[in-house]
Image (cartoon, rainbow, N blue to C red):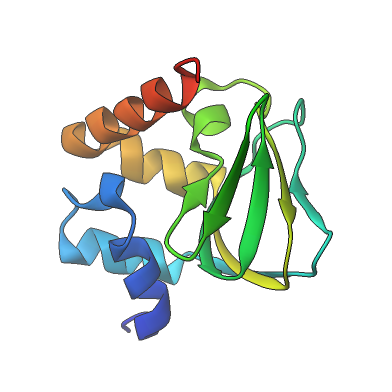
Length: 133
């Protein structure tokens, strides 16, 4: 059974997943959990344990980790805590009603660490996000 087109499009929109086969992307899309969030709701908080990787389907969020950034449709967050097995390094708060898709820790790590191209792309994202502004 194929995942709904929206979920597959969200997965395909994450550059680090580009090296995956369509079958792997479909499997990942089928594992996504839709997460509706209200304006003002905290999605993740600095210092918390990382349990999910998030992709933004709709809405706007503020990312604070010493600097302020915005996350909008097509953006993603949460990979750093999962890939490095460290507490969350940012707080993410919805600034508008938003719709996210989440991938549980084990599903994310299986996809990323099981493919050398995706693992390298994930590490590149981590390095970029850890670079001082």
